[in-house]
Image (cartoon, rainbow, N blue to C red; front, side, top):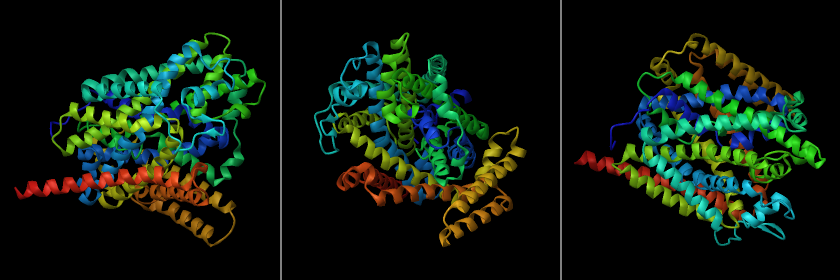
Length: 555
């Protein structure tokens, strides 16, 4: 390493940083919609089970292996077996040069809308907020709809300036280091984000029609629990919301002191992230309830997710608010910007940590170079075709890149390093008050989730595949209680099977028709191309580091 490893000033600083990485834009604009679509309040059952069975074990894996190895993702996996270093480089590579690139563009939109909320330029415009966002602001709208991915235009100057500001903020914070930059900023950002969300929730609850919106959000549809696709959605939401597979949590945990209560930290991070998502959903659907009443429509007619919720539905709501609409708008988009920045900081830190562990680098120069490259790569997302590029790249990097890394992590740690060995380290690093009963609790949850899975398969059409799947589930239930370590069994069997299920669903949909109705050339050239390019970068860095080590040994 180039320098003595830093440590967090306090456990609270580490937990806030982990929460800041996990709590992102998806907690605000995706979770509530997924809940609404998959049974309302009933969805919380598979969601909580997925949290304990997939989310928390993977979080324990990343916290535990980072703390054990005292290194970033590439070096941690290298120390398990040098053949797997490329997996770590791929994790931090496609997040730094893929996910972070377009994520910063979305943060730039949020910064711009903080100022737009002051005078609401979409008011009175034909087509309203939709026409303003996609047409006036992004320049993505044409008479025939949104521009295709190859219908490029010059970069949008407004977005470009905001994007430069986002990268400058990221660079200044990460460039100052862990203790002087990341930790003190996060200790301000996270309490402020939670405070802003509390204000927005309380405000939205007093809006006319809020009760109607909440009813749509949380009213349970128990019949949905028999649909296996609801369970897949729960696993998908948990996996993506906890920043798993990014290399972030491994890097963050590597800065913890020797004595650290890893289990407690993982539980706090997971519960805070999930609790924030549920809580933010209250604000979202209470506000949509108000919007539906104001427009004389049903909630089902106005509900949406993603950028449509943040930059179309919410601006329309702001224009309809009976009091202080400007303040509400500024608070909402400030909350989005803070949620985005707390995550983007962690993505850069994960890559910088990997470079610092492997090479003798100057942190300030490296951060400056990375931010410059990130800004330049992000320019394509500021063109009129940027929304299409964002949609395609996001789909392939998250649906395949993140899931593959999570799958490989579970297999490598479970079968090569040893889940039981990891569990012993976690227990030895810091006592957990309920550790004697925690294993039994996790086994019961895993049994319950597998039983629900068996029930769902029992409702499916009979066939050899369905029969074999049901038989596997029954054998898995037996394995849960026969294995000495629940974490070892989870990493070796349960999590790989769950993540393979996500890959299977994604590939099955991909083979039916090109994603999003885009042309095959766009899907392959942009989506698959970006994914493969980051993999090639990871392999090149991996080979270079091998040769460097061989030269060092020869000298």
